[in-house]
Picture 1 (cartoon, one colour):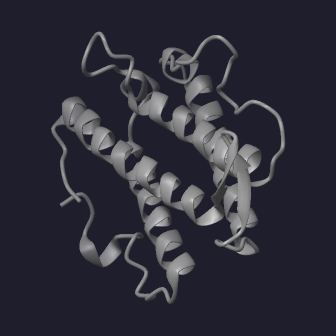
Picture 2 (cartoon, rainbow, N blue to C red):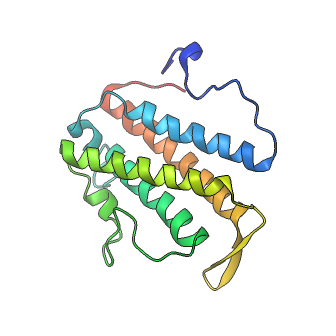
Length: 173
């Protein structure tokens, strides 16, 4: 077991009611899983690429998910311009390629991710899931954005599991 089930922060004992609360609860659990799976690792471990030549690393995923949160909540739902914290025009993989085994890089990644998550949470409090927003020449409902974010985290938590297991053999929920 990764953590003692009695002390698992993802188990809140609160049963969400309704679509928005249920999906949001799942998203929060995936976010907590990211934090749990990265706890106790140093900068070198966070930046280690377990499957060369891929640039996939735990640190790269933290940076990528900070960009994902920013993109969907800041740019799509709020319609605000601007790049994510680890985006660079013309360099699509800078979030992964720039994940260096340096404590400052790790601190910046977590700081940007926490800030993006907090901004997303603040925005979602008042969001109507039926609201439509422009996207790729058409419109999407805010619900679609939230479900996409949930899917993105779910997919990447599989990567996180494998990357952590490659580092120290640790597996679990």
